[in-house]
Amino acid sequence: MAIERTLSIIKPDAVAKNVIGQIYSRFENAGLKVIAAKMVHLSEVEAGQFYAVHKERPFFKDLVSFMISGPVMIQALEGENAILTNRELMGATDPSKAEKGTIRADFAQSIDANAVHGSDGADTAAAEIAFFFPGMQVYTR
Ligand code: UDP
Image (cartoon, rainbow, N blue to C red):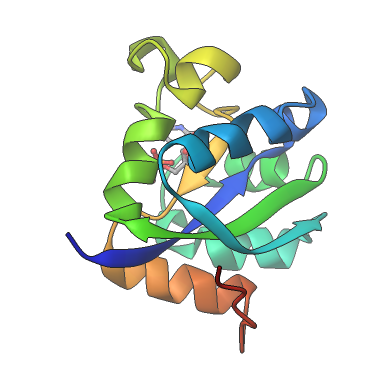
């Protein structure tokens, strides 16, 4: 298995619920290391750029409004198979369909307020990490 990096966002609903620590514990228990992190209140422009791939989707406007409704916690994660491992920890996009014990099943309430984002492939992971952590200073241990 390869050591990978992926981009994770704890969305405004989960930050408001005060479960950043509980979600970080899940990363750590799955062998993922937080190698960069910042709390940010995204602007409309930033959220729109980040989700540009969904620009033509009917939910785009609501998604951007939701993502700027409060602060988010953004982190780069590193570990074996990090991209898939994080996606498995997250669970399905729609929390009502997410497997028990996943972050979305446990902390999310709806498909639009679904607690976390995680890169879905190697190319998006690289692009998303570069978007939020340009010239990233990585702290390894
Ligand atoms: N989304 C939504 N309504 C939908 C589908 C997606 O609000 O019908 C939002 C949801 O917050 C999701 C994000 O758009 O997390 C990105 O969608 P994607 O299909 O990439 O899901 P993810 O990779 O986050 O599971």
